[in-house]
Length: 428
Image 1: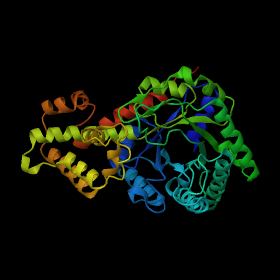
Image 2: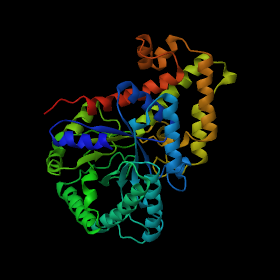
Image 3: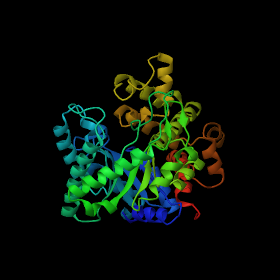
Image 4: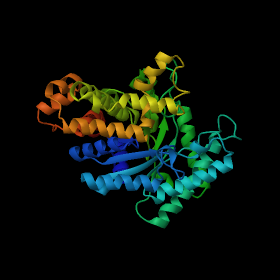
């Protein structure tokens, strides 16, 4: 966890240092991120969320050790050293079991935390902010902190028994819920300085009472709402002036920076401003799968111009069919108007289409698309028409004529903005 602890120290010494966290379970996006960090000599901070990966398999079908094995196998294949990967667990707590009573949900959360830490996840977001079936809404700060301390005790026991580096922790949660707002008209409210200080003070006191004082220097991050968010088709950009009081407040906590969720779709300047404002950890997820989806849709346009119709992959229609057959991941988020709903399903910034890439039929269609174009390499003119950024890179000799390479480059263009914001900062 040295990279994360060093980043905090640099921040506290007046340097504009940051790290970005890739939050995805999409294998091709993960591989693109690996290629990116190898090219730029960075460390990959890769996080799984509790609904993606848990002891029951999550929506990916993977347990924490499954996810770790998948990542390390891929790293070996692409040539990324294991010591340049940090695995993180996001929103670890009762998130997946809010329908249960609090004690049942917390027992499951203890298993979740134990499995994450024993699988080698070193950055742990302790998030017990959500109410369970027998809880008040919202849950009080004292109870949130008590549950976080309970899970931290489990995590500490697990790493001491397995050895290795001690984990670092993040506390707090953002409002609204992860994954973007559901309503583009929602008014965004920043976390107040008072609320942020209260969260820290109550957690510190509760951790001390639980015998976890020694852990406090490893509580490196506090999740707050900095005024950045995205809805279905709308982006709330970071305004440094609005977060000035928050930025000043965190400077007085010697072991902490802010962790900013939902930084997707911010400009490079906005990301740079976030790091300068002591938001040292920038989370990105849907933007990466959004870029991946854009690349795949562009490649299907090329396929339809270039390949015999009998061989079409029909990727887009296969995706939409999968979404129609299982609407659980998007129904309550998208418009009920049929025309708007189709637009939302295909193109919304929340990118809930990302849940359907693991579908067997979708995966087969994507494989067929890539195979069609690898076996019949399209001409530069079609690449220029539908993938102009990749055409430019290809002509400049920056990438090879490879279909997967085009996809990876599209994703890397997003990651480049995070690299520039986090790793290319002058001193104050």
